[in-house]
Length: 379
Image 1 (spheres, rainbow, N blue to C red):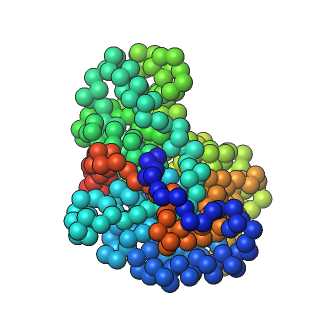
Image 2 (image 1 turned 45 degrees about the horizontal axis):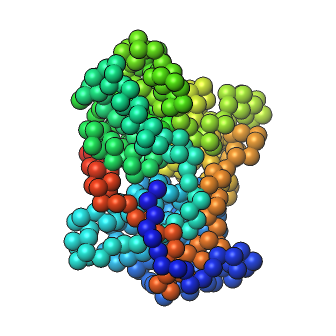
Image 3 (image 1 turned 90 degrees about the horizontal axis):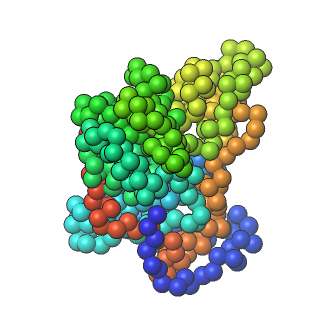
């Protein structure tokens, strides 16, 4: 994560933590009125309801960054999400043509709480990826590997992919990204989420034995043999989403037993054993659209983040909606963004002493943008 050096904040965080949600909301609304269309508050689908209620735009991470970057008036983005999302917003909002339109004026992107990271993104560090690439070069020709990074990754990984002829993907276009990659090379290195990579590649007919998992903590070759690497089509990184990883096949069986006729709807970040048992699967956006399009009386058990499932339950009382797991599991890092942090960051922004500015360096932005633009070509 890249963090710009800010001036000392005018307001300290601690006092905000003792304020009621009503008071925090009033103070947030005051800043919104003051800054007007120059400010956009972005709320990822996994955020708490009280944060979503104050967001100017809500959606998936890349969709939010695109919408904010498209705004001619926006000069400040408060991204209620996690660090890789704020990085992507900075890259898109401050790409060269956008800076030219604003005569060089940057859009400032702030992350209300710097502790809002992503455990999946953190499972693949740039030095680990570079080390893996160097090790692979000792066994196979890396010119014949296309690196593909899930958008849930640090900007440094997106830049690595851009420099090495690769592409970024989302959960909705992973198949298209892999097809793009295989049109260029015989192998793909997919990171950081092994489950999205495996589920997508399996659906394309690639057998599991041609998908070794690279463990960055293994002594050699990610824990695989030279033969396994030479036989590979997709080299999967040993990473996962802590929320989607916890859904199990027995949860699916229990849902079907307790609710006859129920449909299982899961995110492709779920393990293969769950993914293959589901009736339907898709990105966060597809999950929402699937529920919205379903007739009244449809019964769903949904395997994705708890806040989103509960919100769908509230918004669609005409349907019966359940959380797939009997164990409560939410995105803990998303949960760090609350009204106290949002109010604190916005009031400092309005005072001219912004906190938690996310600014990606020029070289990383340039190569990240290359990989992101390739992704748009296959949408």
